[in-house]
Image (tube, rainbow, N blue to C red; front, side):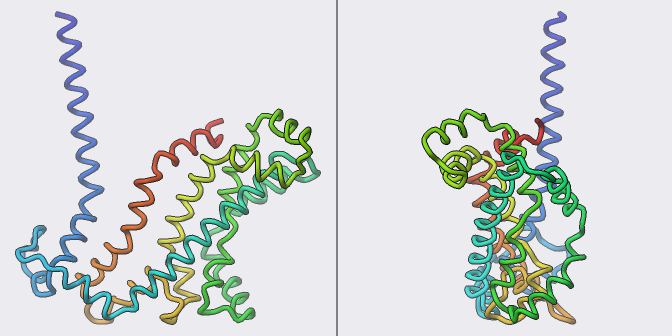
Length: 280
C-alpha cells in the first residue's frame, strides 16, 4: 500500500510539474505566435473585432511589402557584418585580457580586474554621449566602424575567460615552454583551444546582443547605407498609424538568424557557463 501511494504521489508530482512547464512554455511562445499570425494578415483583417489568432486568408504580402518599402537586404547585410565583426573581436579581446589577468603575475592585476568588473555597473546610456562625440570627431558617423569599434571590448567576457583560465593546469604551460613556445604561441595553440566552451558561450551571447542592439545604432547610423535591421524596422512605425503586419513580418525575418544560432549552439551555453568557473 505504501509503495502504491508513493508511486501515485510521484505521478501526481510529475503531472503538476509538466503542466507548469507547459503553461510557462505557452506563455513564452504566445508573443511569437501572435507576431507570426499578424504578419500573415492584411491591414483590414487586423482591425476586426474580436481579433483572430488564426487568419481567415493568410497571405505573405506583408513580407513582400516590407522588402519594397525598406532597403531590407542592405540592412540585413549591415547587421550581418556588424554582428559577426563584434562577436569575433569581442571573443578575441576578452580571451586575451582574461588570459593575461589569470596567468600573468604583475602588480595591480587584481585592482585592474576589479576595475573591469566595476564597468559592469555603469549603465550603457551614460557612455552614449562621450562615444557619440568621439565618433563625430573621427568622422565615423553613419559608418559601420562606428557600430563595431566601440563594442569590441566586453567586461563580462573578460570575467568569463579569466575565471576559466584560472583553472587551466600549469602543466600545459610548462609543456609548451619546454617545447620553446612563447606567451603568444602558448595562448593561441594551448590556452585558446582549451577555452573553447567559454568562447562558444560568449560568442553566442555577443551575437544575440549585437544583432538586437538598437540604441547605439539609432544614434550613429541614420542613413540607409549604414542602418541595421532593428533601426530600419523601427522606421516602419508611423507618426499617426502603423502597419503592424509589416512590422511583424520584418521582426519575424529578423529573429530567424538568432533562433537558428541559439538552437544550434544552445548546449554550449550551459557547458560554457558550468565549465567557465561561474560556480567555481
